[in-house]
Amino acid sequence: MRVFTPNEATAHATNKYLAVLVAAKYARILNEFPRDRSASGLKKLTTRALEELSAGEIEYRVVPRRQTAE
Picture 1 (cartoon, rainbow, N blue to C red):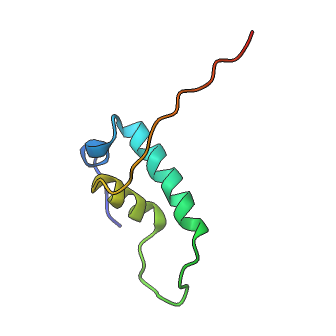
Picture 2: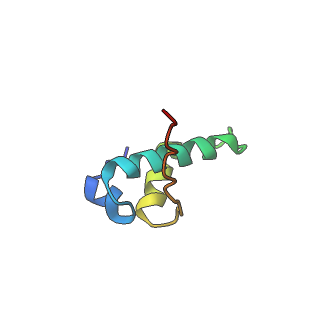
Picture 3: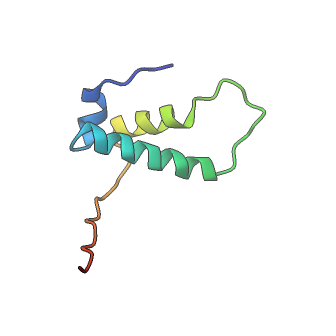
């Protein structure tokens, strides 16, 4: 299992928390695609998502939260 440092994760994100959120969301999206289950030794989806984020292959945008009416 590969270990990602905060510096690697934040290379293409503003902070480490945002990097983890983006990678987790991307891993969920990857999970929706069909995979070949017979191939063993494939990387876990979270590892793949973090690798792609640290390589700058994931494009994302931050959407501001809506204000609630009081």
